[in-house]
Image (tube, rainbow, N blue to C red):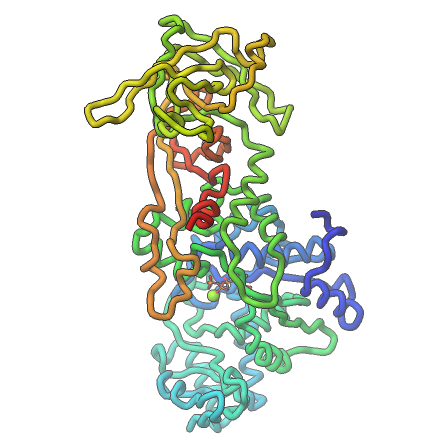
Length: 561
Ligand code: ATP
Ligand code: MG
């Protein structure tokens, strides 16, 4: 979709209004603020496309800000993975920022709040503090430490910072209103003591600022105009503004928090915490397992940045949380791969076919077009011989007229090759068909220009020549969860819905041109789907992932039910 043709989403309308009233165009600045406690997932892609999309639309800078205030869960590995994923999606950030770079500034501001009587050190346990919170309809109870003197607060807070106390001994709380109808305004915690090394500040700090205290002030430090977050932060907006009120100066830009809906994808979970469980419990092989809805999993599976961006643009930005069907994501990757993926032939469930009137030992190299959607893709040669594999599913002894594949007495065209006719078949002791004997029409070769070569038969099959075929491990994926919304069930854990058959490994027989395939290469195995070369692949042991089938097989199954 071209930028002009698309109508504005509601966030863009907000920005347009702000441009009329509050900000100059050159003051616009956005940020994408992941917490480095896991890998990015497809939900984050929506937020990335939104923020960086705004940057492109208004020619405004977009910061990549790591919200790294919790050393208990955060790691450098995640920082690196996040940077890689944002770049891979095709976006360039203006400045790489870390909330941890603002620890000193945040501390200095907290001291000012204490001096202004707006913050105090509470020495109760977290349980006691929680028990005094009240309920949405009942006011909370004030802490017995709420009216400590400024001097005492300053001394204790400094002691907290200097490591004089153990974890949990004290917290710093904002002094707002224990009777506020917004529970978040009931003297929220600003700092806690945590004797834990941070991946960037190491042991410089043993007190760490909480999300609410950090986020808005970070936006202010970076002079972000629009701090876009998901809807669960709507009630936090009042606190975001309160914290800003304590520090903003009139000559600087005042950031605004605005909210949009989380995007959920069907048949998976989009929460780093839950994805971490899948990794830790060994349900998947890692964060980049091709079944994971992470950006790195999708990349390894063969999704392209274009397909993910197009998906995010199509679903757009919503005001209410919702679940998008995973088949829409598949649609977008099919659409893109159809344009760019070379066509090749590979048989995944082989049935031997002997062409009895083809000379023993003869081979021919047939012309095969690489991509009918892209003339510049050129052509290649595929070998043909007396013995070939076709798919088991492509042959039946008997079938009705709607079966356009091979049946006894029937004809099909071999893709890029000849018309063959099934004459007989051989079975093993269990009645399984193990070989089909065919004859071929020597004048029917595709592209040879003869009358026979133009003869229409109903079915065209892919195939590979047995003596020329190379083998590969082919990994076929299914949905990771059997339920459309695995984490929406009150009584059952999302883990109960893990699909035990989400990965099937088969041996594929491939045309020999694939011997040169490199990790990441994307191909269409004709009639079978789009595949790519997995990172586990070596020249001795090729490994392919099925990115997606050619058609939406689930839609068909669901219609039948
Ligand atoms: P998770 O629960 O997976 O950890 P999060 O919101 O805590 O998600 P952050 O790292 O804090 O993860 O997210 C960075 C940004 O991405 C935030 O602005 C957040 O609102 C946004 N985001 C996260 N998940 C989604 C989602 N499913 N849809 C849209 N935006 C999302
Ligand atoms: Mg989070």
